[in-house]
Amino acid sequence: MLHCKCSHSENNVVDLFNLAQFHDTKSICKYIDLYLLPLSTNPSYIKDTYDFISKVRGQTVPSNTLLVMCGITGLYTNMNIDLTLNLVREIFKKYPDTARPDHQLLTSLELTLKRNDFEFAGRIFLQICGTAMGKDYAPQPSEYFSHLHR
Image 1 (cartoon, rainbow, N blue to C red):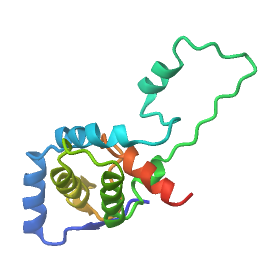
Image 2 (image 1 turned 180 degrees about the horizontal axis):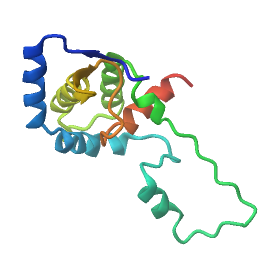
Image 3 (image 1 turned 90 degrees about the horizontal axis):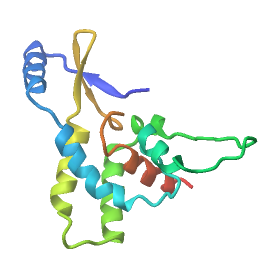
Image 4 (image 1 turned 135 degrees about the vertical axis):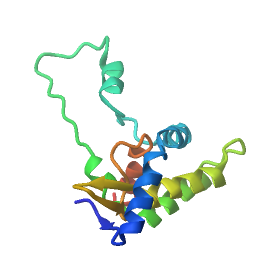
């Protein structure tokens, strides 16, 4: 379930739509991911199909082997945003790095989580819980969140 609210004012809808046309967060999400991915603590983590193929290429797998996967992509759109930001902040504290721009990363993460508006069926919505599934960094906070609930 995607939690969002609709912009009700026609002027706000037009302004959000015009803003969204010129605002691409892909680069900033990739930048955030550069810092979050190395902090991933799950050795069985697979980012995508290409990552899976690179990990199994050259492996000999017995014919009676079952490959089983459990995805957490459903968690992306259901994580509490403030909790997610606090979890990332705690991960940064747990693994300090003076070369990592923590404040800028957290600010960027907050902007991309709290200002994720999109158009659907001719209406503009603001996602108020979780993150969009296509964001590069989405798996990492989901993993931190899943560790919290183990």
